[in-house]
Length: 219
Image: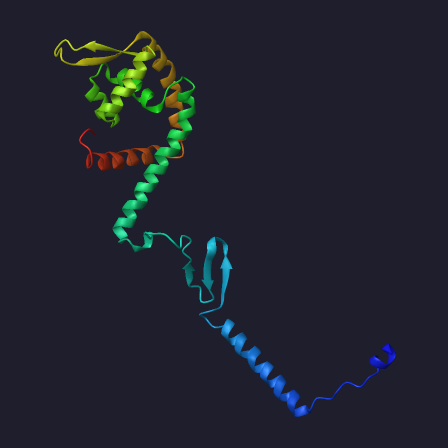
């Protein structure tokens, strides 16, 4: 039975019908090929979902399809200012995170270290003076000083010139602690900024001071 099936004659297809069918297929394939090779539709998908057209025109696909705001919609000067803001914030966070573990090893937070450092270099200060130097609100300064006082690192001493206010002093323990910490801190900051030349550091310092003075009175 199988032998008979294999040797059965295949029904013949009229030549005209076959040519018509083949012609339609060739036309369809030619159309598809032309469509895909057109400059508007021929592209390759690269990493980060960028669509690169064959004429070297790059179209960046928006990754956040449901975003409320789009950075490309802002004026050029605003985009430059926003980019600077982000770079400054990231740089500050990067340096702070690199130094925070060393300060935390002494059971201190960054703000607490800042208060000790300010008192060590500038001497006894009022609360408002500390807040101005460290750009901290009065409530934040009070909280930081309270915690340092509980640790025995600072003390409140009545101001001889104005008995309504107090001056914050380093205690002997506080003086000893900051004297131990600060040289290590200075060496770490030197290492972290070692990628910049002396001239670059001076230029960056001047630019940041200019930016700070334009936006705050305490510089």
